[in-house]
Image (tube, rainbow, N blue to C red; front, top):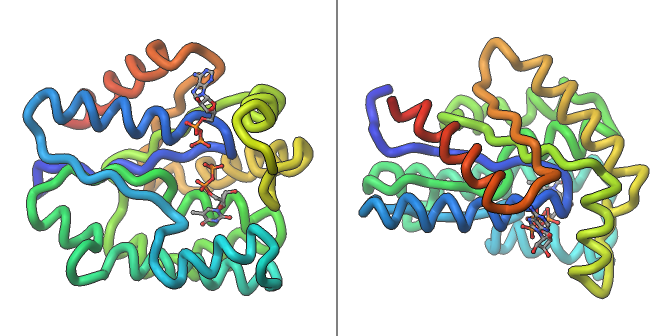
Length: 208
Ligand code: ADP
Ligand code: TYD
């Protein structure tokens, strides 16, 4: 690896605790004196905002259109000249993203051909492959309960049946790409600190 600063993508079903772990890892790296840029998909760009409008039923779109919007949102997330992930990495930041292309493979792979989704994201994979994909593995029932407790409304994809399907698709995608992608699978059905410890071990492994 020519650069030392890392690009880490967190993955998991809704409510798996990704955002929590992104924050804990970022805090720990910053305590070490490292530069860290945390980010997420769907982004806050115009394209990301359009996606959120669809998820909250302000706008209607077919699942295939949504998959296409995520392709565009991701390219913008990578290539934006000021705050794109490639620019941040070039500037020496460790970049941690809450979701990246495996989310597309899993979420859209439940509605359409996963191979199509992988091919449609080939440009992103070519531009930037994560040094590590960290999958927080939580039972869909546990995740559903967390979502219910944390929020008043549940989003488009947040039904138990769908969370189970998405988890299965994640497993299928990891299997399919096992030769090209690095994945740390972490048991997320535990308390936050225990999970954070395993995340840290995974990150230390790639740095050594
Ligand atoms: P995600 O980003 O994957 O949707 P969050 O980090 O937002 O997940 O967590 C979803 C909810 O579950 C939040 O209310 C959060 O406080 C809670 N939570 C996160 N991690 C854990 C954990 N390990 N055990 C119990 N609750 C958790
Ligand atoms: P997010 O805001 O991360 O939700 P959560 O915190 O509940 O995990 O993501 C919003 C939704 O977007 C989530 O249900 C997953 C979905 N999504 C896709 O369908 N395709 C994608 O490529 C990405 C990145 C997310």
